[in-house]
Length: 394
Image (cartoon, rainbow, N blue to C red):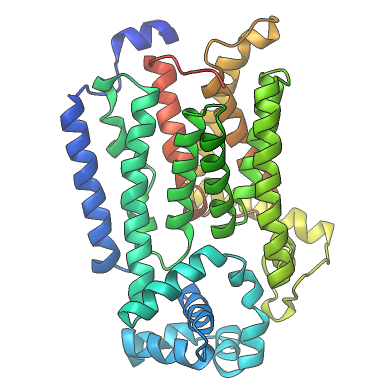
């Protein structure tokens, strides 16, 4: 049989089973409850939790370094605790408080997450419990918010794609991590929802900017997507005045938060990771670290690509899917015509460029950075293949 056209695929609905709006909503809520429970039943006691716990305690005015290690040891037991002190780097981090503090700018550059952990941890008496609560609740809320994103993108009968997208996008694992990623993904999905429903009123604009600023304060790599999204929208909208105003306000707000974090923490973004990632010398960490070696960088890119293909194929599949979306939806532009689905084209192009920029700055395809992109890409694919209600132009 010959290949089906996009229009034929839309009519056939060949790859996604239909379900009622109520069924899709109930299944999405059940998945949300399941990931929230998973955060407490199967938490991953990753090393980063020590850094965030120490910062949370210091945020409350308490001693951080020794108390964080003590609480972790009480949590996991002496035998499992050895995994957090095994090797020269981890051993030095435990024993040398000054060295431990010298690495904190990388973690303190997520002040929104640190503050949330500190406030909840102080209330319940455990920063690690607070991290589980934040990751579980953030992932659960992100699933619910993405349901409304899908509601704007797709016909009501196709919303079963939401739980499917989150299962395929590895959302369960994000809920179990003691990192800011779940909180950042929740804010990313909320930003997407507000952007899709954007209007030119001051209240709507203020809310969109507030979420963007909170997202940057949770993870600095949000700045990449926000700036690139604004740039792509300006190009597609041909510098229309509403798009110009929106871009100016969004970028100004995101940059203001980023530079405030730089001034407060000394973390100059991905530059702090050059020695650690590219040269693999933890003892060479410096904040900021302006050193750069072309050979080491090229080696890191090659290794990152190999790791993506062999260990994180979802990253490669996401990039390929976004490439297809951009080529499919952007075809009218080559003929001097307006694209029929500008919002999907803008989002697909912005995500593709943001993924490339993120990988260039930090060549690691770790899924915890990209789950929000994976889920959104699946929703955009479903919209393009099956069609969806028209969206209001920005």
